[in-house]
Image (cartoon, rainbow, N blue to C red; front, side):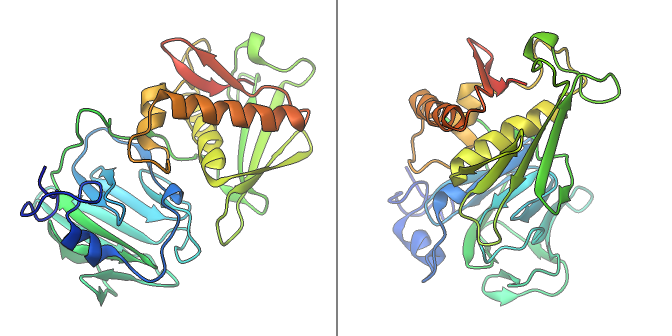
Length: 293
C-alpha cells in the first residue's frame, strides 16, 4: 500500500511512509489517545493524518481545538487552545482555508505561522501547538474504518466544566421512564478537564470520579449523542454502535475492534460501581451503547 500523502513510497507507519512520518515527528509528542474526530459528519470532504499515521475525517466546516464546539478534531493536549483554528471548505472556489482563532501557541502551514486565513492544499503540513498533521483533500476512509459521526457537546462549558443534563420534564430532554432514576427526574453530569489534559473528573450525584482520557471521551461522547438526539423516540435515543465507537475513539492500537470497546465499557462500569453510582451505560444488541439515565 502506498503512502496516503505522497503516494510515492510504501506505508511504514499507519497510512504514512517513513519520509512523511518523519516530517510530522517533533521533539514533544502528545498521547495519540488524546486526539479524536468529533461532531456529526454528513460527508467526508478531506482527511488529516497525524504522526502515528492515523486518519481523521473532516467535513466541510471544522473546528480544531481542545474543546471544539462543533464538528472537527478534538486534541486534548496542553499546547492546544480550547478553540484553536477553523478549517473550512469554500464551495464556490473549491478551496480550503485555515484560520487561527487567536490560539496561545499558534497555527502554522508548512512551518510558517499564519495570522490571517490562508488557502491550503493536499500535502500541506498543518501545525497546531506541538502537533503536526498532513492535510489531504477529498480523501476517503477505508471500508474497515467508518467516518466519525460523534456529535460534539451541546452544553456550554461552565466553571465546573462541561455539563450535561437529562430530565423527564417535557421542556427538557425526555428520557424513557424505565431509564429514569427513581425519585430523581433530573440527572446532571459534569465533566471538568484540567488545562493540561490527562483525563477528566466526572461529577454525578455529588460524587467526583476520576476518568482516564479515553474513559472521559467515551462518556462525553455518549452524553453528547443523548443530547443531540433529544427529539428522537426515547426507546432508541442516544445509541452509538460498537463499530462506530471502535472507529472514532482514540485507541492506543491501529486496529481497534469490538473487544476493545467491551473491555473499555467493563472498566468504566467497574469504576462507577466502586463509586456507588450504579450502571450508567446501557448496551443493546444491534444498537450499541448509550447512557442509561
